[in-house]
Length: 119
Figure 1: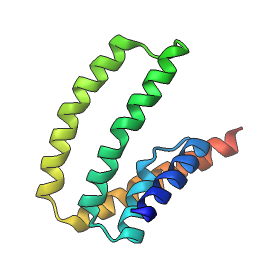
Figure 2: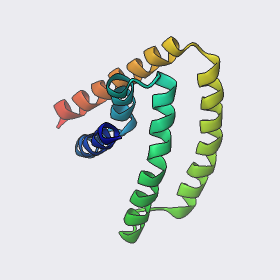
Figure 3: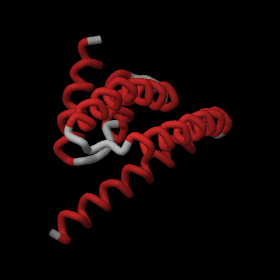
């Protein structure tokens, strides 16, 4: 439990500093450090995002940075997307998910590098 807490704190700090989604750090850390399967790591990361997103939205709304109607539409659509993602994740081999996630991480890394070079 202590290791999971440390992963959460460190990944939260790093993702906040770099502007990347926390899941891109949580999922590999949960799989490699704690030994969860890729599906378990993804599910755990998704559940951990719920309170983080709620607090972030609440704080940003106080600053006037949240468009409530757009957020509601996005939230409703995301529920369907999440449900579809679960069905797909359970239908494909775990190795395919790992490769797909690695490809996503490479894409995110390339975007970070591209943005750093443009500035």
